[in-house]
Amino acid sequence: MNNIKAFIFDLDGVIVDTAKYHYLAWKKIANSLDIDFTHEHNELLKGVSRVRSLDIILDLGKVDATQEQKDQWLFQKNEDYLSFLVDMDASEILPGVVPVLEFLKEKGQKIALGSASKNARPILEKTGIASFFDAIVDGNDVSNAKPDPEVFLTAARLVNAAPENAIVFEDSVAGIQAANIANMISVGIGDAATLHGAKYIFTDFTAMDENFLAQLIE
Image (tube, rainbow, N blue to C red; front, side, top):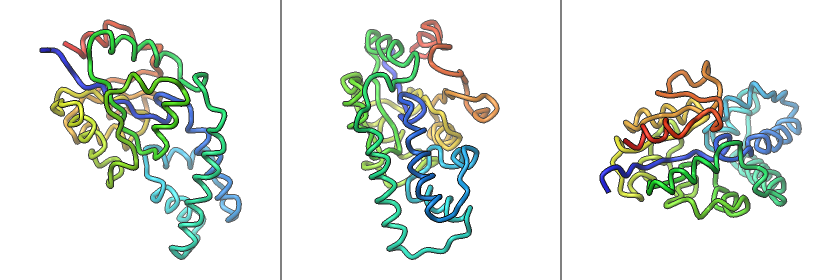
């Protein structure tokens, strides 16, 4: 049991391509408020809580709102997002993810999810990969959003791993910052220019070979 590490995965944009659905749901809210919400603006929401995401969008349009209005928009956004997930299946899993999960499971490593999404569990079930995870921590389980490291520290604790023995896979700047603050190894999945704070960066999991994973285990 000497080389047991915790491999903690973010969800949206790392395991599954649901980021596009978040964008469409937020854009629908923004459009209703006459706010021009672009893909570039959407980058500001990566790894950020739903409440904070709405505040960012309202700031973009300089829109003042009551808490009652905000609550209604947050509810509507989630309903629209969930409607996109109804027909979700394994085809939504990003390339290379399953082979990595299989390799880590075969090597006896601990696998956890650390996501801001409050829909993480049903997504993992719909895509058929929930059984790979020894622990799932999502937006229902924590009160502090990334870059606060709470979600990753909680995941590591649930699989009995010290932070320095944890590896985090993230596609957002806030997520990389959270991993670094937690004293975990950060692996960026995506654009190198954006994720330059990560210890390692790969365009996606297909660019990651078993030798690299084996080194992380050692």
